[in-house]
Length: 266
Image (cartoon, rainbow, N blue to C red; front, side, top):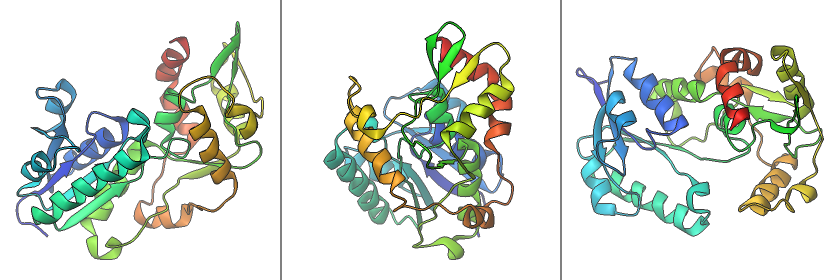
């Protein structure tokens, strides 16, 4: 362990997950955080930590950003460009730059839309949408299959634990999740906390979702079909071994009522 704060480079620091990781690291004085942005003088990044400009498409800028770092946290965002090959190339650029810069510990967070953090899903693309005055639908095509739920804040706390105990986690994939809930259970939770509106669960099927007329609908539907297949299990017990205290969906909704209300009015 470092005598001085461990230097960590955090990508995606202006986003929900990367921002949560940066804040979790900054709350612990054992870390020194360098926030990577593509645009200089980003207010969000500047408030978080030392800011450095780099682009995942520019290997030289990545190496400069990582120089002197002990660890790197990387999250990519497929939905920004919806190009699988580009996302893979960006990841390779980051790994190559980390190797060239002598980084000892590289933590990659795979950004999967339907199994991403509850903050991204329920404040963003999968927020309850208005079907008529006072009625909102939770339109997630998982039917009766449970959905893995985890807050961005808990992801950040898990990353802190991983970096503080590197030998226990090196070269391992961590199947993080805090809770498994059906869409009906999620809907019931919304109804519990909101008295001014009603939430319904239409139980949309994957084959119906892929016909929705927005960019990326077919890709999202294909991923939901994969998740329903159960081929990528997440492990609550394994997650608790990394971070013992986790936020439940019920608690998250209670803590984020104002943000949820704002999201539903957009």
